[in-house]
Amino acid sequence: MNAEFLYSSGYTLQDGADALACQFITEVTDMRIKCPACQQKATVYSRANTADDINSVYARCTNHQCEKFDNSFVSHVAFSHWINPKDEALQLTLTFMLDQLPADQRRQVLAQYQ
Image (cartoon, rainbow, N blue to C red; front, side):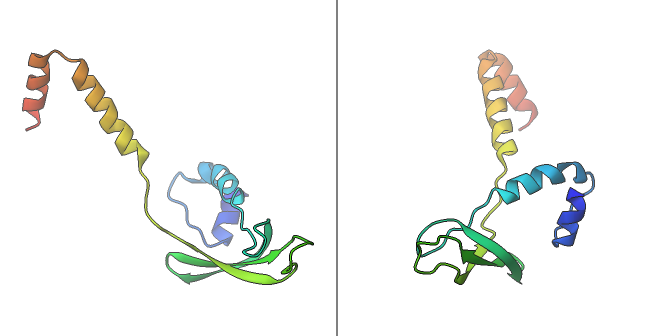
């Protein structure tokens, strides 16, 4: 069901990623859009892809005390950059392991890869 939801929403999953769909949906539904007038929670009622990396999100203010209550607005959600913490963690692990070796063994290991 979760993977089907993603497919119907226009997302594609890589091979073997169906098992991660539930986690992906949980992360996506945690996102909140705020009303630009009162900064309170707004309800998203639609979205549209305006470019490959930009989505227009249509939302409505739900704060009864807001001057813009029940008015609609558009926010843009855009891709910025990739984050790959695995590479950084691997680099730190290798550095730590090399630091633990005696100097002569460290030179031998490094000489193999130069």
